[in-house]
Structures are given as structure tokens and as C-alpha cells.
Image (tube, rainbow, N blue to C red; front, top):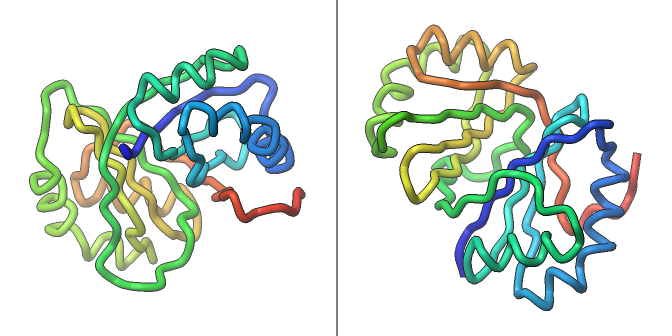
Amino acid sequence: MAEIFIERQFTPPLSRADVIAMSHDSKGRLGRYRVFWQESFLALDGHQMLCRFHAHDTESARRAFQQSGSDSGSYWSGSVHVAPTPALPHPTVVVERRFAQPVTLASIQAIEDAGSWCLQSHRVTFVRTFFALDRTRMICLYHAPDAEAVRHAQRQAGVPLERVWACQRIAPGDTCAD
């Protein structure tokens, strides 16, 4: 099974309850394509969401969503890299990175390690990274007081970024809607 990521935009915005309802409605259809939802990160404003699935390949996920008429979004395969510190809190901020040329995870990690004091001074804790197999896309998840703390720490450290947004994590075990 591969790690599949889908980035989507929404107008009007989604709520936590909408995401939970969508997951219940799509469970059977996704299962037929052997696509299994792992978690989603919904922007606090509800306009964007990153979802992680396990599936045979990206095309399986695309077909499952096409069948429901909700094929919009950016689909990509990647790997998951978890912080070495156990029992970290759930992420609260998403950092999106795009690269014109493929990069290595180690090269980006070296930049962040060199500026780790910035993260500490802004009370930003690394949680996880999703790294595209083509090495041109990276999503990093952090726990922080707010998105601005992460944005400021990343810029001070000189780590490249495209967009930073606050999020809430929603996973299959979540059944209560706000």
C-alpha cells in the first residue's frame, strides 16, 4: 500500500461535521477501490484540506473520487516522516513547500536543523512531514500557538515555504461533529 495525499480547496468552506459526514458517505465506495482514509487536516477557515489515504496507487484514489463526482484536487504519492520524539501533540499548523527542482529530505532537514533555535523560541514543535515521491512537494506539520509563529520561525530559519495555515486534524475515529 502506498501513502496517497489529496489537496483540495472548498467554496463554500467545509466544517468538521461536513468532513466526518463525507467520510461516512464515501467509506463503501473507497473500500471497493481499496482506498483507506487515514486522516485529514482541515484549515480553520474550512477552505482547504489535506487528506492522507492508504491505497494501491494514486490512480485508485482518483477513480474512487471520480465515481462520486468529487475528483477535484491535487493527488500525489509520498512518504511519511515522523518526529523522533514520541507522544507529540496533534499538529495545528500546515506548512506547504514546492520545489522547482527535486530536493532531498536531508537537504531541507539540514536547513531546519540549523535554524532549530527559531522553532524553539517561537514554541513550534515539528510533528510530521509528508514528502512527495517526485521530491518536488513537501507538507510539514507542526504544533504551535498559531500559524504566524510557524511562519515567522520558518522565515527566520531560512526554510523555503509556499503557504502556512492553521488546521484541525480529523481522523476515522472521530465521530462527534462540532
